[in-house]
Amino acid sequence: EGLGRGLGAGLVELNLHATELGPEALEALARGPFERLARLSLSGQPGHRQSPAAAMRSLAALRTLTHVDAKRFVDADAYAWLLETDLPERLELVGELSAAGDWTYVLATVFARPWPRLRTLYLHGGGQALAGASLPALESFRGCRIGAEGARALCDADTPALTTVHLPQGMVGVRLGDLLRELAGLRQLTLSTDNLDADAIGDLQGAAAPKTLTHLGLSQAKLTDDALARLLTAEWPALEHLVLRGNALSAEAASLIAAASFAKQLHNLDLQGAALDVDALRALAQGPFAELRALSLRNTPIDAAAITLLAESETLPQLAYLNLRDTSVSSEGIAALAASALPALEEIEVGDLAAEKKAAIPAPPGRIVSQTRLARADDGTSRAAARYYG
Image (cartoon, rainbow, N blue to C red):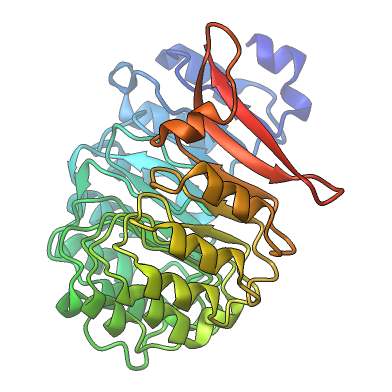
């Protein structure tokens, strides 16, 4: 009520994360003069204190609302009540809706009606927060399951404006190929699953999503080289961000990506955890990555020879960020990169696995170095910076 009196008329966005609202507070929000409120976060609320029907009616009373983050706010039973309102007709973002256990029922319920304006869909199963809707949010999420029927409900949904989908880890009986073939117009797709092999990808001939996707994130999905090769049989004319973090990829993956037609337009490549070697680094350092801005080689078994290849590369003119955390690259190797001829390199992120890297930047008394970065100064000399935590 106080917010309504003081700020309500001009408020566009309201974040009520973990504020322990009771039903009466949500009703006050619905009654208040929030004439411009478009984005509302209710994440982290004690949802058991809310009546599902009353909660959805209160949300529907906010006539300008287009974005809702309801993570851990209501349970699966509330989604049927959502369909009793006009929210499906006007929501552009369903942010971080969550349900413990099986999402199949929820998806079938939510998409029983058309969502003509829905652009972004986050599904979350509890435990991990998702990134904000304005970010690429190429992450993996755990905690809930989507069966084949749930995936079918998503593919068959009447969502003509849908461009961004983030799905959780634990998908059961879902073929990535089905999603890629049928989610036409998609711009961003992030998912984690335990069965992402070549069979799960299937035949991508004529698939709809690869024609429009700019961001593809397949993290912790046990993706193999064979599955990656199958994935790359499709054309990806718009792909700019590719995240393959924590998969079962070998050194061959780098060569496969370098040979792909989208390599020349790729802005961000994340190969964290891949079993890369000198040949893989040669493919990256000498490949057609003219637009690559960010490269993550975190937790890869690269060595000094591989770093030399990167430092001497003449085909990475836009590379500004390089992640070498959790590698055995020495401080000398990092210094060589910082002094290299890579014209756009601004930031090298390194971890503290190697003692010499930690010792290279002294910490203030009583603090530890948890993350260090080397960055290039405007005059071309290298400078060191550190993030400290007491």
